[in-house]
Image (cartoon, rainbow, N blue to C red):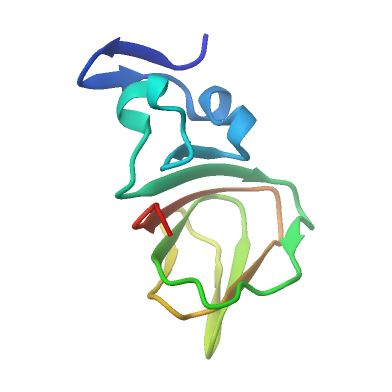
Length: 121
């Protein structure tokens, strides 16, 4: 059924469905304001389903936001400037601040939640 703005102050839906047309991004400055509270300049939230072998081979360059990536299921590797982590347990996370570059790879079918702030760059 997708996103359902129920009133001016809240919404309910399904992340897989509601973020299907925004590459997994559920909340952020790029969400149409008609989606209510999902449109935000303060934070971005992404729900991502990555098949095994899916990766970002190129590294980010000088992103000036703080990012948190949390494993929901699967096995997922995040490399950051100066290190990295293979996440294997539900709830494992990697977090980094402004100016830290990153890359990632799904080592198994994985679901990850990403929170990044602020939204507008």
